[in-house]
Length: 478
Image 1 (cartoon, rainbow, N blue to C red):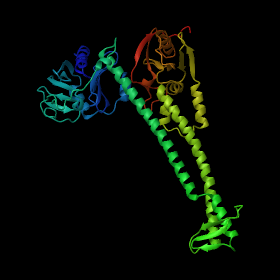
Image 2: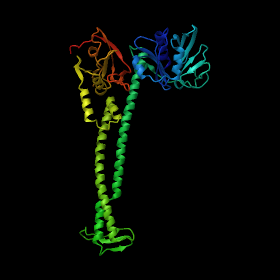
Image 3: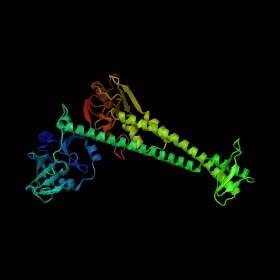
Image 4: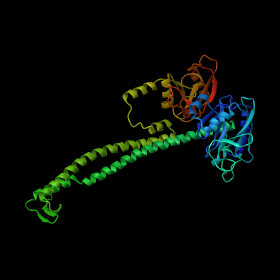
């Protein structure tokens, strides 16, 4: 986040937050907080001090989604809650020449005394941090451990020295979108970037898993062929055993070589058979026959296993091609299936359950020719959202009311026309418990921003990002 963007963010935050009271804190991750200033439109202040990409802006999330996504509060978050709960934000200032925003708060305690604090958000790369300062500028608590003068608890706060505060090459102009606020632009950019990152991790996981499976079978194939070579040619051992027995009477011996007539040769040539020293001809023949039996049995068994491996490798290479195609079209659901180890075939019961769940959807065609699917029951909603819908399909649900999940299929990755958006939202409102109201708010987003919280009941989801449209509940004339 460069200086120009940070200044625009400061102006935006000043307009939205000054005069507001400090509310609940959500620990989004180790280095990320969301703070409730009781704004309208479900907006929260988001602060990230992740060294690789520190940033600050307003985000728009549902409260219950933040509750589900947040982890246990850090010691710093607990300290902020203790000191700033109910505090009023008086001012937001940017330190001259620095990527640091200072939030000045005042709070009245139980005795009626006023206390002042400053929350310093230091968005400075490797030294990124948050500090809570007292009225004299001394550090009361830090979000993470950093070093240097003015950066340690008990010190009077001062910005990190330039040697630690490296200038980052940042061009935020490509992030900012026309018609969107700076916060909205940044939020959309980072949500999509995180989604791309998750997709990349998922793709790498699927490719790595398949690569291991292929490599394991290739190694086994090589070892089986080496084992087969060690056993030698079964026919050769049988032939030598037969010739030794056939030449018991007329064979001549020279050390560990026995010269015999080759009755398999039409010219009856004499050949030398190498045997162990001090071994009789019959004993040598028996040993060749034992080698023959082992080589024959091993050859049959190894041939069967090689055939199986050949079939498995062919299937895995087909799967490899399918994964490459899925990566090309960003088919996140298929990659998740591959990564989740579905090597065991589903039972007939589970298949029938999936088939039953998959049939529980109503289907409409919008005026623009887009297919609109509507879940019937909670299990149908889950199946529709997480097994039928693709990452770039449009997903809808009535805001704050139980109802059907609605998916607008988008196989060609086109922009959904406004008329289709309106029609599908009306359907989502109609198939909800809010259908009797004159107007209903409907949340919509791409399916890739819809998540299933661990352990959540059927039909319950959380949204990483969404927009809202107000519509009349009805079934359009499609």
